[in-house]
Amino acid sequence: MPEHARAGLARSPNAILVSRRRWLGAVVAVAASVARIEGPQASSPASDETRLRDLINESRRARGLAPLAASLALDEDARAHSTKLARRQDLFHRSSREFRRLKVAWIRVGENVGTAGDVDEMHRLMLASPLHRANVLGDFTAVGIGIERDRRGRLWVTELFVAQ
Image (cartoon, rainbow, N blue to C red; front, side):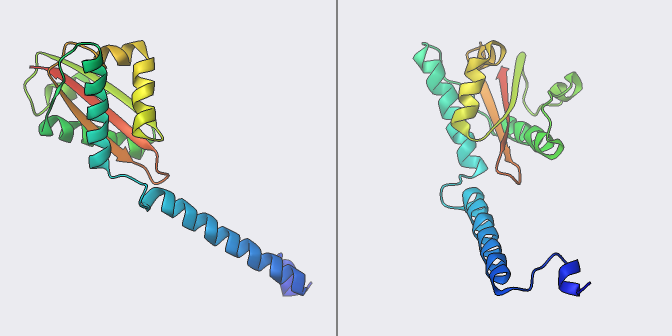
């Protein structure tokens, strides 16, 4: 059997044209994927975190609740947890031991974790879930937001709520 046949290639000019079209199609598909993740419409984790904090506080204000203070220390804790979620591609809460190691003092703590395609979708999903909504609208004073984007562009989110 000729080598080109064993490799799954056809020798006719039409097959070469089809192969080139497939190759060009693959290049365009890869370029589109990269543009979707890294292009101008893609946001940074920091801007996503700010946007999510704003959405949380807008939801609270709309219900007559005080906005939550931003906390850089909680953001760091939340970001570290979101990194773990994205690496494992799994949702899980931190242990009680990990809560005791948070970088801020707290009287009460709550945590929401989730994954979504974008920040607005994540916030809608949190509000649609009674337990997550209870944290968003709960009796807390500060919030830390951590967002990690995986290689497919999916967001892995940790919202860390504390009352101090």
